[in-house]
Image 1 (cartoon, rainbow, N blue to C red):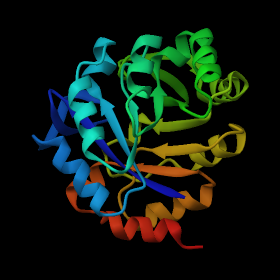
Image 2 (image 1 turned 30 degrees about the vertical axis):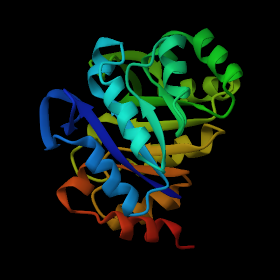
Image 3 (image 1 turned 30 degrees about the horizontal axis):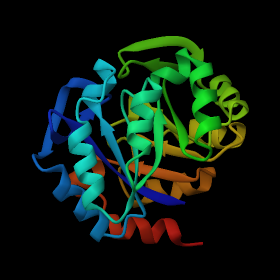
Image 4 (image 1 turned 90 degrees about the vertical axis):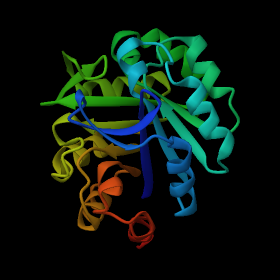
Length: 240
């Protein structure tokens, strides 16, 4: 299982939110580049970058900041937040060092867009399924649909999506532990690699997540609060 440190960008700063609430933020750094270099130095194989402003506005608000981060790193990145057009998707994919992009809202609303992207950029398209009580949430988590998260996952495999990022909103930023049952079910039913996101609070959570069969785990708040040391997390995930 791979460990993926998260850098969420809002207003050009590195922040963490609680349960995706834009008004419940903690600023951890005014220099996201420094944070990215710190995670790279700790051994991260890939870094998770999210444009939180774009998730709400639907356009790449922090594109230049994200590009600057990628340019400074040797480590690969995955990028999400507000990628809802072919133009934005390809702008990110054309940056050397971007391993994959993560589509959120557009996946629930426009299957044709996802299929076209996956065909044009095989292996590069990941979809973020953000769920609340098993239902898909969109537009920066402010709108909960009636779409079942597990049903959507199966559809996405058929559309050619390479992987999924599965987030349980109720756990995100809360340090309350991941939803192990939901991650186990998603890893079993999706048919493609699943990256778990939300709620990881300590090393024991990493051990438990590994047992669910997920491909990777995104860690955010626990790294910034000091509850998890990234080097130790990577070593734990690499153990048989």
